[in-house]
Length: 86
Image 1 (cartoon, one colour):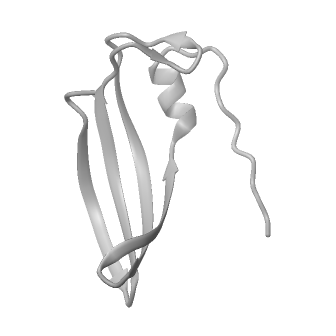
Image 2 (cartoon, rainbow, N blue to C red; image 1 turned 120 degrees about the vertical axis):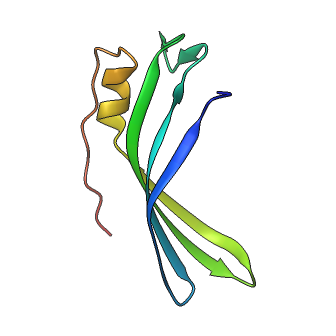
């Protein structure tokens, strides 16, 4: 994806934890999963949470609006969020 872009809207830190909210956009080349998404543009919301130890990212979590991504790429399957506990 040569034109992928991350527009960071917010960046927060508290001790060794960093959080960011951004919009990720680009144009897909090839397939995405089981369907062709060649040439389709997308723009989705993303949140990132990182734990930093010794100046390096030790753990990274991301949340992406997958349902919107699949719709923009032309999937008819859609996506359903499944909450996890524990």
